[in-house]
Image (cartoon, rainbow, N blue to C red; front, side, top):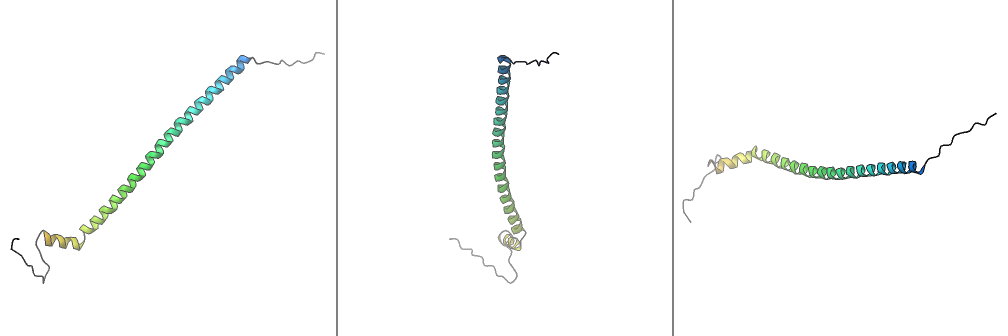
Length: 102
């Protein structure tokens, strides 16, 4: 009977060099990809912070506009305009005019 012989295939050093080269190339590509992603992440994070600051500024402006709107709709503003621009007075008030020039 013949003994079964397994054929052992020996790798040549050239094959290992090629595999090592592609592995190094692969890891370099992965590293470059990660670095570019981190760079983009930093830019987007900074942009998001700037947008949040803008949102807060716009909210403050909006609150100021709401206060102004409430004031312009109030009786105090109507009375002020009537007195200053139209020269009106309230009932039972006496208007004194000083014609002397200083």
